[in-house]
Length: 199
Image (tube, rainbow, N blue to C red; front, side):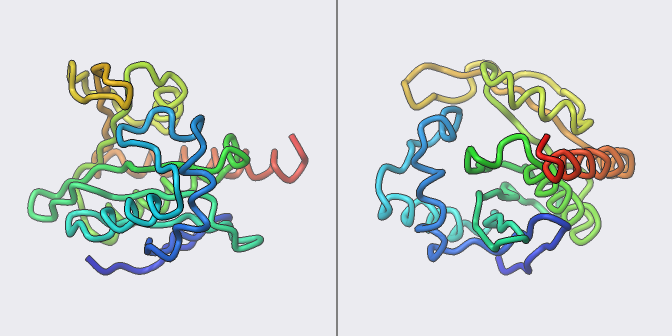
């Protein structure tokens, strides 16, 4: 499914391709970055390229690499997946960032750009995110965005180590989007200011 780049104040979301494998391999192969991802961590450049190929070949996914605007570096990836325009819904996931970018404005602005695209360009009614029940960092980050906790799917998926995970589901609806958008904008502004001051 073809799509355009989405540009914000600190990042640009560029349609993902296998050509991004070299730039994304260092973060995708980092065990700490990949800790909570349900799919196996790519351990080689070829493995990263194959994984990205799977992502971009899925017609129900809109996949992006995340490019930092000030230096053009590719610092991560994120996707809209299980996109169902007829039902007006999608999920955001397959998201990771280089560890050096954790805590900055990049993830928040990536979410702002994806939500804006989903609600304002695609006219979707609902966006969901899910996370591992053990991933407290992700749960806190999602809650800070203003999403609503919907419930837990028990024993939903197999983790990489073979254990079973519960998946916590969160969502935002089109009518809730304006309030979430303002929270995201304020968060991005605060994080950008903190980065600029070295805080």
